[in-house]
Image (cartoon, rainbow, N blue to C red):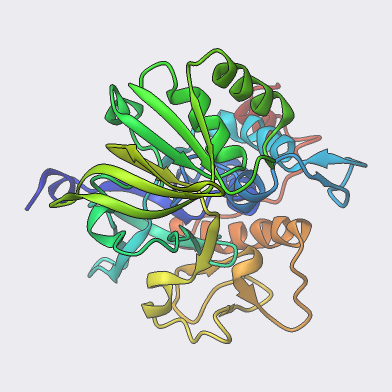
Length: 345
């Protein structure tokens, strides 16, 4: 048994998904003294908001006539800071079993183990997984020469790195890895980019200065032996171009998949999890589902609906975590006890 399996992380609540609804659940649960760990397949909090449309304004968050998706995530992170949630990024739940003592033993795809009294699924439409580029023979290089995320920047130190894509992820990593990579070539199918203008301007300045390469075209082939990448072929308007490349980061967007959640026996309906509207509990006692992942009569897929669901879920979760303890409803505006927890008393 490895170290992670031999020493599981124990927590009151394990939240699967760190989007806005999962983050707000930390706040509600924290008011009732329940400790939270969160798992997300992405490399930062925010879920779909942070990954797919961070700069887009949202207009239906109460008290905010307009707030960017990333701004909402930032405010939520500020709000839950007093409760010190623990995040586990770039991993997804691969196994879930109920233990003899009623708790859940949860394992992720990289071997992290948890023991939790409650599991809250706040996974939006499921786990975000990178889209595989349509490049023949890419599979043997995945995880060695081809990576879909940056887990450790130092893994790319001194490498001849090709970054493929034209969005924020591609441009951000081109700029962030530029100081440590041996050479970076940014590849995009056209000379227009969807990334933030400031990032595009910084990239073009580096290209003009000869410190970064920009190739307009599409990767059509990979070269190397035993998963070790040595070069790529790019199809351009002037014909194929061979580039010496030892690492490649393709950013072709994300797809949502329910993944292992589908195997948890939760009586799925069209890849959604049915819940009641009192507790938002699934067919499996102790497992709750809030946000876009759940379904019930009258369900609206709105962030504000997920916030409401998190509040009611918390009441039920407290009864499981502290059986027999009297639950006293309090307002944050008037309860000095709650204000002390928030550090504002």
